[in-house]
Length: 460
Image (tube, rainbow, N blue to C red):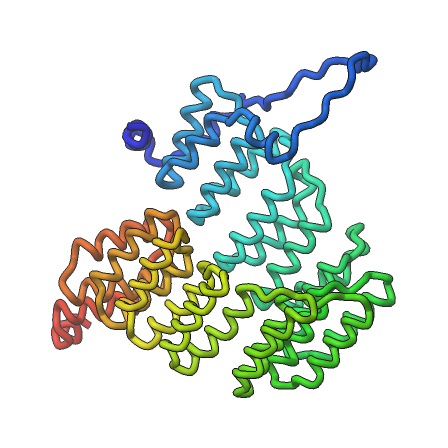
């Protein structure tokens, strides 16, 4: 009922962005504060943060916008609430921006941010951190950099957390030169790098294969009295383990212990991964049980290394047996463990078996995540079961997850080839709702299949 009302409103207003100029009289909501009075009553204890969150009265617009089906509906709902006299403030604007960001409607986001700036609404840095990540997913890295430099104009103080977030986005998107340049100017921006900042730069240098530069950053941490964390050591241990330089990795493990840092489950998982890469699966398995003797309880990540190695070597049945062994030891496999098994089954062309694992996972109380659905859709496409892929896609979209563009393209092409035009049109509509488009090359195969290669050549 709610969706139909919003849809009817949208039909009369084809472009909700055109109506933003009508919101110039929008006022921010201010809380009245009483003057300070002497505290004559005994002070009550504040409720726990989690309890306070439950007691907080929900904002109607924020609750409703989460239920909308697309960016146009969200924008129409925003305007409808305004016309009913609702005064939008930061929670409303941030909820709308999050909704638009998930649908990659960045044009609308920029318009809304302009209104936020004009009204001098106080913003939290978490909003901009989320936008950095969404811009990165859409390969709009320059937008993220620009937004970071403009944060102060949105009545928001740039924090070290936002600085680290941008730094991490740049490293993860292979814009390391930009990350290094910004890191070099951190003191000019008023930031003192912490262990997270240095860990991100270490990760960036190691990603480029520049281990000596990574060591220099590590040494700089010590010179500036910034204590290396377990993550700092894990980055270097992981690098050497993946290169098969296990002696160097083991040396770092001992150095870590001598300096009072306790290796965690990830530390041992990285060493186990190195052992598996050089064909020492049994030693890796032994290390998982030895780590308990040293006071570090094995975690799912350690089992994940073993399951991955078995799957990589095509020993799927042994991997399944290891899952059963986990359960006997009262380790409950999580989504990540199941995803590892699903991934290797799909790669071997056993998507039907992978789907059974997915069902087992759901029966066990775990909801599939975006990666689960993507692997399953791609797995069905690999064996050209496009009908099965479409069913998984529908479940994926219902769960508010979105496939990659490549998955959409492959599914559209396959559905057209097998004659399921309605299914292909459904996928295209979902792509349009997310501002995704098929490239010309993708259209070529179904057009040739429908019209014939000779006909196409004649038209050209």
